Length: 458
Image (cartoon, rainbow, N blue to C red; front, side, top):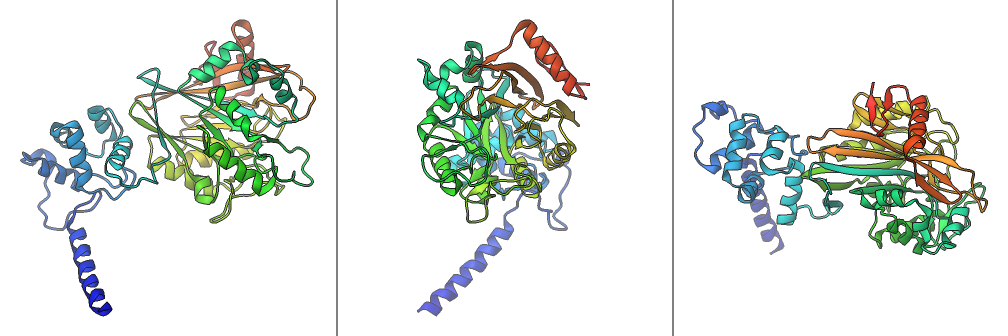
């Protein structure tokens, strides 16, 4: 009986292979003698004919190299009308992504996401995609800050606990409104959420906070935290896994770490105004010590980029599935306001892999901002709200990086100057802001910063 069932199974498998081979897919070359003629010379009256044209003419990479069959295009016709498909064919270049966006209000990547949600296809692959309701229908705004530390013994945390409104009293009103009001706020979570484990032996500074502190991160408006840094492993494996669990059980999302390498490499995707934006994260630090562990195929850890190979793979994967990719990287030399050749070399590799903007941190001080090709690179945003000991640190300059992504995918890079003083980070305005812009100008070589904070390419 088993042999007979096996035989039937083989026959069915062969039939499926034959049937599958007959279904046209994007990027496949039509068989020789298929009679393919230019679009403008075809007499296309039926939807099925238009779909066949798309399957024949579209390149395989315009939709992220997914194995798309005609079902996707019939779904588009159902959602947006048959005329949408006919107009795409009339355009002559069915792989022109902007035509899809103009006709549907969604990029091809967003359409594919919605198709998967509608049909249940690839549910896990797309579970890390989030809809954003933008305040401006023409612009998706994202703010990035530098290092935040809520370590229990830090002076900033002690100060926070003494305030009537906790963390809300640790930022100026206008800055808090900015963080809470922006479409997406991204912060570097420079500590672990745990009450367990032991501090790593030999490490000078180790930071951990009670998992309840995650609510303070949420209260200031944070949506996404970057975990690829040199302090998330300060209390070992248990500290990292407690951190992952804490963030997963909150409303926050995270990038740069995971229970295995695939998770650590995974992007978070945001659908905003019909576009799909990816955020990925990795750390170059530590460069000589081995305190922080990189994730492997079956063990938790962070994603590292001292050797950029794995991170570039993550960037390239995200690029195939989104309109733009934003890279957050922990790199550079602490206390050095001048970015170094190793950062430039890494930035060049990230751009080659598909990065559209790069946001750096780790140095605990502001570094310059540059354009490499047409990609804005913020080398380091420095500390944002950060102390290492129970002694309140001296005042320091800091900033938010603001990216405004227009529906045509152009990026306006901006700086929001800030200053930390006595436990409070405040947004600078007026002459103080102009002075801060001038200082950043001195640190930067290929840009000028206008008085409204726009980073202009020279």
